Each structure stands twice: as structure tokens, then as C-alpha cells.
Length: 381
Image (cartoon, rainbow, N blue to C red; front, side, top):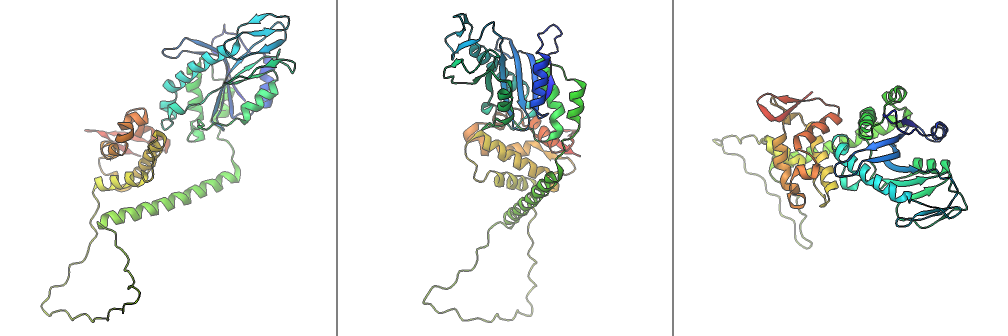
């Protein structure tokens, strides 16, 4: 586990024993931010005990830790207090962690997703909530809780953190982006980035031979996609699809072979047939049209299609030219494909198109640069 403690020296600190136990139970794919202060626009400032993010699974958990003077006799859902042994009523921590979750979700949507997960649909963000208390044991009556779960055993909580899954996982495009994301989350949650955590994040995870096999497999798939794309471009350039000759109908005699008449002596030689070169607009249209084949009306599908199309454009040397790639042309061709369901490209992408294109190019390992005199163009290195 990578632990990012509070940046506020006066803030409450978790028990060193609990931290050590979590570090034994969780690996470095789990990032743990403790005693966070989350300030989201339109939400009350939230003081959160723990925020766990599993970068491998793409899951997030907000966890409230409580210590009570007596054993918890009854843990209930929102609307009623908890009861301790002896009859004492205490504020319901499920209600508290629910408010914290709302603040964390709003903060992530506004401060993290647009920059580090530009292709992720913010409405699909899923966060799990939990309450942990050592005073919860097997004798505690836990009523049915709609959202989240109550734990009294630290290994059980750690097992859920490490093995949870999400229908919409928040996954980084590559491991090289981990350090930048960790720094952004620390700034958002008001926690520190310890030197030892920074060192671990700077070292690429060891994947072994399996990573090599997966990468080779991915390259083969990309080559196959490029071949299919090239076939589409050839068809567009030819202007029509040549249909194969139909066999003669059953019961009819085949046509007699007719010998071509010899050319006239004075006939001019036929002009060589040439495939017309595609214009910049046609090439851009081919990439986008192919990517949007079979796409439904969901924002996630449209975003994925735009990503695929932009990657194809980035890999098309004939669209670079002396003045770089035209982002405005990409937008002009792509807008009709999303207008019916989503209105505009910035709306479906969650940010201006040019900013999105720059982020996608950087994620692909390229270095986008401005083109003097052409503010809508990008030159890539």
C-alpha cells in the first residue's frame, strides 16, 4: 500500500499500527489517502478518514473509521442512530460517509477526470462507501444497508478493497501516468506525497514476459486495423465498390465468348487509369466514418469512437503536412456524427476539442506543438 498522510500537521493521524497492518495486507496498487480535506464547489467541506484507490482495479472507496466507548449493539441504515451496548445512541456514521462520498465524487469530476481521464464519462464514476469500527463484532446486529457496508475486522476490509470491481473502472491509460495522478490527488485531498511513495511510483511495474506477449498481440491487432482502414480508403478513392460478376441464372446458356475486335490503326491509346488522390477532408472523413460504424447513441461509445478516429489521424502521415494536423477539420467532420445525440463535441468530451486532442496526443507519447499563424492546428513530434 502507498500511504499519503494529511498535509495538515494539526490533523488527526491514523494509528501507526493500523497503517502498518494495512501495508501488510495491501500491495502498492492500492493508494491510501488518510485524514483528507475535500473542498468541492457547492458542497460542504468534507473531512474524510480514508480514501482508497486501487489503480489496478480502477475502484475507489471512501471509508469512515469510528471508535466508540462500548461495543456497537445495533448498526442501522440512514435515518436512525446507532446503539451501543448499554443503550447509548450515537450519530449514524453511514449518514456521515454518504455526505463525504458526495463531496469526493464532485471533487474528482471537477478536478481530476478532465485532465487525467479525459475519455471517462463523469456520470459513470462509481465510489464505494464503508464504515470501519473495532467495536463492531459478530454479536453486533447490522441491519440491511442500501449503500456501503460496515466492517469490524481490518483484514476483511482490506480484502474488499483489494478485490472489488467496478462496472466503470477508473483506469489510467498507462503506468507512466501514475506519478502525475498521485500528485494531483494529493493536492485535491490535501495530503502529502512522501519521498518513498514517489520513488515507487517512478519505477515502472515489472510485468515480465506476459507484458511482452500482450504488447506484441496489441501490435498485431493494430496492424490488422490499419489494413482494414487502408481498404476503406482505397474504396473511397476509387469512388465506387466494384461488384463481383454474377453467375448465369440456372437454365440459361452461357454467353458465347466474343473475341475483341482489333483496335483501329489510328485509335489513340487509352489513357492510363489512375486512382485519384484523396483530399485532406476525405481522409479525415474516412477515419471518422470507419470509427463510428456500429456506434450506438451512448456518450461512452461516441467518446471511444472519437478516440479511435483521432489515433488513426495521428498515425496518418498524409494528414500532418507542413502546417500540422487541422483540429478544426477533425471537429467539422466529427460534429455531425455526435450532434443528434449529444449536441457538440465539447459536450460529449467534457472539454474543448483542442485541449482533448492535445491530451490524447500526449497520452500516445507524442509532443503536440502550436503552429504559428494557425491556432487550430497541431504539429506533432
